[in-house]
Image 1: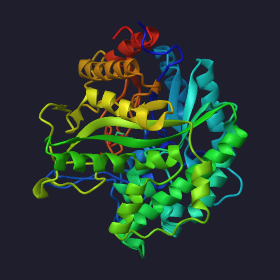
Image 2: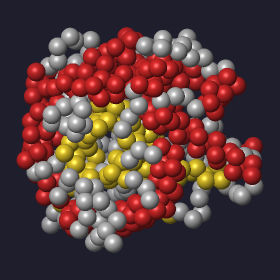
Image 3: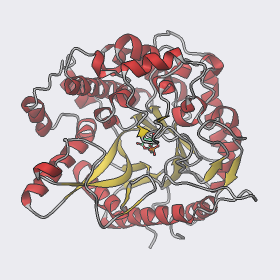
Length: 482
Ligand code: BG6
């Protein structure tokens, strides 16, 4: 029996800041991502690049010309979009997830009128997709804030971002609504809780609030911006769908001791809460309670309850990479909401970057979400970041990636069999791009290899990996031939 519906959206995912490049062309302004750079200490201990501080940002600004900013190059999609989309077409993609760069259209975020070159670029990209029967799936913001807004307003800490964002989103909805059927407002809206610079374009040390209050304030502004966008979307793009998205982390109890089970439940509630707000249209009481207990102070946006109620989304999207193990014991406790966890799951193999591989966790998550929300679920990111080797004859033998994806697709099929409503699957980085957390090309996810290294050396030529042909077969057989 075929598990996947006939219109199941097979595809792949990218983001402008990690893939597009062409950072100063066509009048584009710089974004906060363009100031993230990979730093390795002499002893090779890696410094996580995404947690930019005010001091780092000042230093990076002084070295505009001589520091290596990999996100500014991406994989050069800006110049190679025709070649890339042809490759996606060859694989048989039904959809292609990409994001629009806010600063390509509104360089500082404040302009009244958008850059015409930027507007034309995305029309060209969508046209090219349609030539191959590919429906674009567009994320309105994927970690991509005009740097001017970070520097002058401290990013999403300020309610003014809501107005600037709405100016941008209303423009793209009006301009592209006939070319794009599927949209997502914010990529991984919960990420601001783990990296305030990456997810919120903020420097928490510049805020008058405590770090936690600043973060939840920013998240509140993002919820409002998303809800007002969704409302406008429903009024103006009636034949299209808009979703939200979180980085989903399925949390398991360390033992069957009820204290551990409760701790895991709390982590799951916390991880789900942004989707609760965006699908159900209100803050869950567990979170409001948490705010009270932790003295988290929010300046509630006027009329926010009505705005959230009226701005719910049509589908719930997730990224899914790994699961986590939670204990209530003092020495094993993790801060609530933290994404990187120390407790290992002995039943999971791990990737070269230490991420646990857990396809069944995806089936569990899909079932949980299906019961909780009752809207279609879209897995818009999943995949294996790995070291790939390009052979002399231009091949990449990535059987490990095929194994990983096969098991996850089986888990999705099983979840559909359980009764879950899953609308599509777009594995991450379908063409190699710059890793977000590590700011490097070395961590590759794609079906297509891009000949570039961490410093930006290389031809940027594209090569089909073994997984390219495998995924082509999967799509052709609608998930039957794995
Ligand atoms: C998701 C992000 O969290 O994970 C992507 O939405 C990111 O932008 C992906 O690239 C994989 O993470 P990483 O750090 O391996 O690039």
